[in-house]
Every structure is written in C-alpha cells, then in structure tokens.
Figure 1 (tube, rainbow, N blue to C red):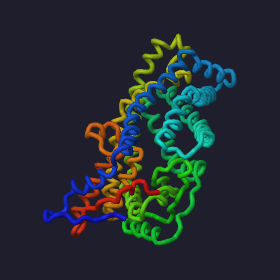
Figure 2 (figure 1 turned 90 degrees about the vertical axis):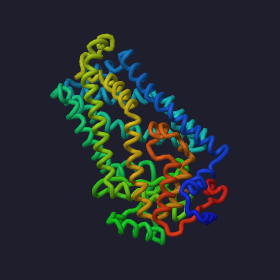
Figure 3 (figure 1 turned 45 degrees about the vertical axis):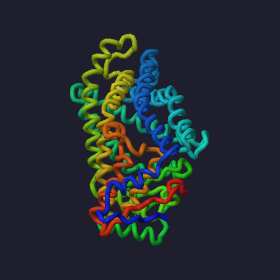
Figure 4 (figure 1 turned 180 degrees about the vertical axis):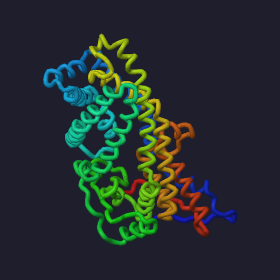
Length: 414
C-alpha cells in the first residue's frame, strides 16, 4: 500500500511529490545502481576498442586475407568468395571477443544480481544468436560488396538502402521466427487487467488483438514490455516480471507507454534517423577506407576496397563512427522514449503507477544523473526525469492531487 499525504494550503508541489519517490532509493541500493550504470559508461568505450582490436588482429596476422584465400579456392564467383570470407569472419571475430562478451554479459550481470541464468544456459543462447548472425551477416556483406564493385563512388548510398531493407524485413520476421527461439510467448489471459489494456488501446484505435506474455524471468528479473513487428506481425508483449512484480496501475502505465511508440510511429522515425547515421558513416568510410588500404594494404594482404579481406577495415571504421555517434543515437532513442512517456501518461492516466515503474528501473539505471551525463549516456530518460514528468502531469490533470509517500521497501517487493 502507498500512503497519501495531503499538501499544505499552497497546493500540490511537483518537486515535493518527486522527491517523495526519489528519496526512497538510498544507501546500498542507490550506490549499487549508480555503480552498475556508471560502469557502463566505460564499457561503451572499452567495447568499441575491443571490437577494433579484434579487427586489427585479423588484419595484422592476415587472417582476413586467409579467409578470402579459402573462398577463392572454393569458388571463382566473387559473391561466393565474399560470402565465405564473411562467414569465417563472423565465426572468428566473436571468438576473439569471447572473453569480453563473457565478462560484460554474464559475469558482470551476475555480480550485480541481474542474471537469472547459469553459464551453460547463457552460453546456449549465445550460440543461438551466433547461428542467426551466421545467416544474416554474410547475406548483408555479400550485398554491400556487390555494390562496392558496381558503384564505387555511390555504393555507400545504395548500401544504406540495403541495410534499411534488412532492418525492415528483420522487424517483420523477428517476432515470429527469432524471439520464440529465446522465450515462450503466450496470449495474455482474459480478465479485468487485459480488459483495461484493451480499453486504453481502443480509445486510440490501437490494435490489441494480440497481447503476449513472455517468460523473461528465466533470463533476468528486469521488468519490460515492447511493441514489435510490422504489418501482420505487430504485437504488444510484456514479460512475466512485469506481471509478477508490479501492480495493475504500473502495468497500465507501461502498456500506455508502449502504445505510444506505436501510435506515434516511432519505428519509422527511428529507422529513418538510424539510416541517416549509418549512411553518413558509410559515406565517411567510403572516403577513408581506400586511403588506409592504399597505405597499409600490402602488409595486410588486402588488395583494395572491393576485396572482401578489407572487411575488418570497414568494421573498424564503422565501430569508431558509432562510438563517436553514441550521444546522437542515445538522444534519438531518449527523445522517442520521452514522447512515449507523455503519451502513456495521457493514455493510462496512472501518474503514480508510472512513477513507481520509473523507480523500479533503478535496479540497473542511475536514478539522478547530471544534465550532461543524461544527455551523453542515457538512451532513456532518467528515473528522476520520468518521475518529475509524472508528477507534473498529475498537477496539471488530476483534481485535488495528493503527494504520495511510497511505503518503505516497496522497491523490494516481488
């Protein structure tokens, strides 16, 4: 239960109501939340450097050239040589990065009690993900190198379009063919909660024929929901953690947020802006890569940019580009999330439920960053920003609003 505190004669104070929530996260819990998230700042840098190092090793020891040579012994067709090179690259590069992947995605998650899996289960899912990559990555790389050969000056533009096609096809197919490889999806049970969700969706003409629950508790305890798919595969999904760990008002707040992504066409906006970032990066690569290869290609045994052995050169430059663009990509996603937050508050009309969910996300997201810190490193609004938005909505839209004093320990409730 939550206690209500009537405000003084001056009326409802947004900052007082906000602090009532934020101050519930103190001591070791706040220290752990801050340490986990702040450590992630460095992971962005070190992760990019680890990828660059792996690609440099493939060049330095002429492994990429060896992959190409194997391809040329197998086939004389250029697309086949490219495909074999890409396939071998997609196997060896993850092996070189394996220590980093194990630390960041398994041991570090266990260190902060965010992982539900044992190592063998986690590793099994990694292998499934790798198998999917071994199908998709060679096809994409074959297409890009075909464009490099046929349109040496404008390949970057055509390649951006090809990436867009791959993204859209993936978005259509992923809910049906990929996501079920990792989790079991079942229709949400009929009942009062589903009725309320469907009523909110109907108010905004949002299709809600399919609302799925998936068993993400087997991987971790984070609460989550999403809108996935396009056209006939579009669906709203929420994980079992959200159902089991939160109240009805919190679930409605989350579902209102997810409906906002759909209603505001965020999929198309985000795809479009990401493609602009990718396209600008590919344009830069198209100008820089030939110069690097002309200077160092002989010692790498890379002939020119049309040579599939140049793949690590392209990926080094792309990794560096995406590292530089991290603030831009974070801001893009954060903008969309903030818009969905505003929509969800209007749709669900559960400001305190929304504030409680924002506080629960402090398990793995720093609750009160500085302004510049949030701009650079947060791909979602911080908990403080979200709670403050909810309390402002409450002040503007609720008759006789009350300051809620959350019950001590409510963040620990399962």
